[in-house]
Image (cartoon, rainbow, N blue to C red; front, top):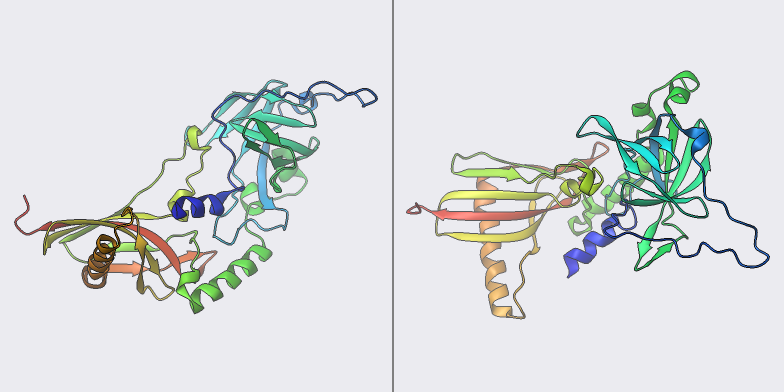
Length: 319
């Protein structure tokens, strides 16, 4: 399905991989004549508090062309060679996770596969790896996580993690170029880091945006909330009962444009045409009269973006 593929394109390989099944390293043996490989040891770095300060692609950018932002979020502390403590923003506390070590500086923790590219007492650089079937792609995703020790940030760099985590000038220039294309053609919209805001200006219409609670199951990642903002809209005293789901473009001026239905029609073109015609009429009438729309922004730059709409109409005699 196109929407699923688009979602995969937006985030892969950027999001930290969620591993649902255990993976055992199968290439432990050394071939004759090969240098003996050792498992990486974190013992020299145990007890040091590290905070992630950047997460970037190989090209140095933290955004991709779909508007997905690689956000530095992790705080961690190695406890031992088989345990790591990672900060949970929702619990406001460090949680201990088992740590599985592999060869070539690869390890698994918090449901993610990572490869240590560089480590010392001041900093760590890790690359995110991805599992393909029953094997691990050790070539990596070319997404790099950079950590600094908290003491190094405070006492040597004389700054703070919040400052270090700010997007770069290169990120700003990249978003500016995407925004210019999306302004010229709203169909070149991309996900807004601060999504378009839709609010009601009528007591007959209620609007709510769906939100995802970041937790350990999604690696504290609620990026779906801005990659694909979903709005539920209920209209009282509608001309009849109805329910439609479709995508909608919101340009940099707040104008609304119909995207595509979010339901399948099993090849029934007549039913599809009727659905599009009727749901577009709802957008062109109710939405334009009863909704306030504020365009989305990324890094303070206004641009066209897309939202998913689920609108329910309740007829006047509806009880």
